[in-house]
Length: 281
Image (cartoon, rainbow, N blue to C red; front, side, top):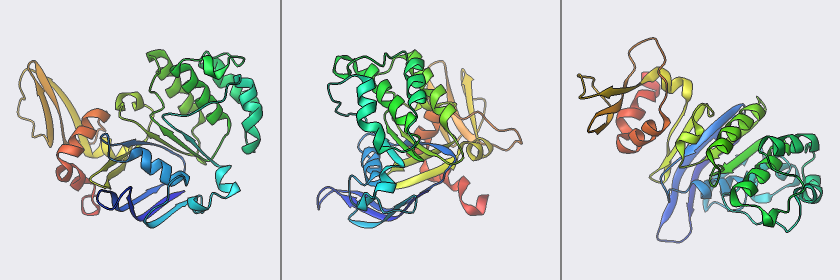
């Protein structure tokens, strides 16, 4: 569904952002795109959307070249940006203005999502808080029923109940024909939602694995006091205890700690990623 090969991109000649980046994302999954600030998560989503063009390499989305911005490509992709401008109109009017660009838009779903987020369809967008505006925009995005849904820091500005509602709604719209990519630095917001993790670091994709594969290969352990002897691939310690990632030698899948996993991959990339190479499968 999304295929990136040998991507090279830079905003200037001195500082490369991506070099020989390769990534394949399939339909039927909710991907969590993780990376430190400045690693290019937003830029990568913009390239996939055709808002930026690669210096070298190829990007294919739904069999289309995003650079060409063809109608059938745009109708099936929606990017929820972290920051966006909105017209000074009501949510109902907003849908009337823009829904025609998306042939699979469902007005009843739009109303339903707004109600789930506790947002009034008659509210003027300029009078809404950042969090309310974000929920309204996400409601419209979900109702467009595009095959590719890209979301950049979607939970920024949301309160805790709204984040829970967000997870519920995203889970409800996931389907075997849809690919959802959520970029965030708030990894706890993705727990129990995503089924695959993609990590961007050092100009490349350094990790791309399903939650099932991670839970089978790795064990996530928390302990009180001192470590009783577990050989960790990565460990974080505190005064009253700690937590770490170890190789899972049992037949029982471990519950994945996404935040700990991300920290471990960035700090101890080879020790963790080597477990997922073909020779270890």
